[in-house]
Length: 214
Image (tube, rainbow, N blue to C red; front, side, top):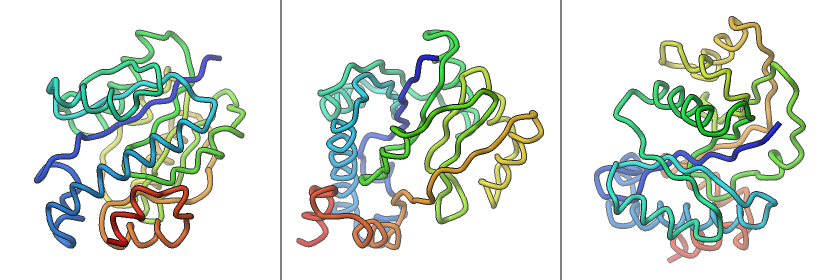
């Protein structure tokens, strides 16, 4: 089955992206850091066998599209703007949209705020039928989800606390299996930034590390 790598992301903008981090380090530094996260993510992705990607960007402007095409210029890109639905409704819509374009396929989905994303977890994955793969986040959510496009209804549940438990229950209710990748995390705040800096080499997160050390 064809495998599709999908990136769900915001263009760096003050007051729009990384607002929790901005409250701790200031608007300007948070904006620069988020841009660095994306540069490191793109750099590390370029070292994998993945050459074609889908990007679902927000806000819905030409500047956003131009930004992501520039930052991921090493890839063949299919680009779509995110809708104004709630977060999980947007994820459901994403699966449906890709299914319309690609037909039945396996989707790997993650976000732009993980400069040291563990791509080795994706490269060694051998998807099984009727299995949803989740990357547990240390904060109780998930940083990655992988599954066949036809399973778009895994996102049809009421959000709240313990997101990982909620989506896992939803997957089970649909008669599907859950398989976990290694626990990892994205960067929403200063704590997440420090965790990332401690666990990964400066070579892997060179843009991020250079900014924070300054």
